[in-house]
Amino acid sequence: MNRAALAGRIDAVEHRMDSIEHRLDASFAALSTQIVQSHRETRDEINATLRTLRGEMRAMGEALGGEAQETSATLRGEMRAMGGDLHDEMHALHGLTNGRFDTLEAAVAESRRFVLILHEEVLSRIALIGEGRRN
Image (cartoon, rainbow, N blue to C red; front, side, top):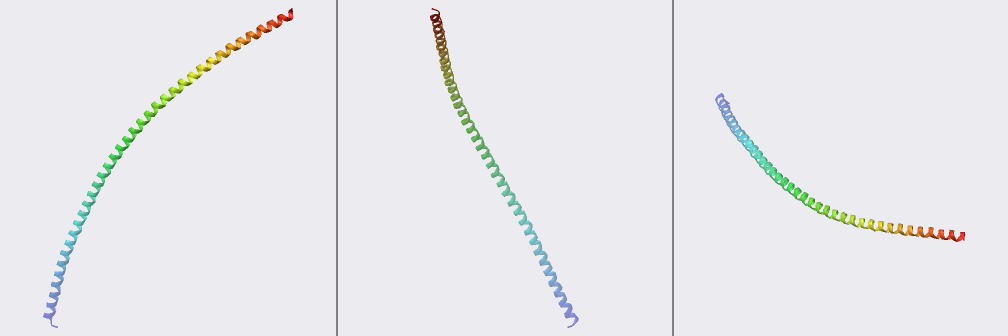
């Protein structure tokens, strides 16, 4: 092989290498651009999903808070109603108890009267018996 042919072949290989290097640089640049673009798109999609989720969670929290307030108001109303019923029932029982105590006091007073009457009768009989012995 002569020098001219070898130099030509080396030039051709160098030209091919330069061409391959330029294509590789262009492919790398295109791939880098695609990766950066994909990264941006992915980040934007994640941010959009996060905003959507935050909005949904906020709405659910507000709805839950509203439900809790409604349940609390309902329970308070039921407790007030039960408290009123309980108060009325206790008042009725108090009246009934007072009536029974009044009846009991009247019965005790009447029993005392009868005991006093019996006591006086016993004393008068004892006095009669005592008089009968003297005669």
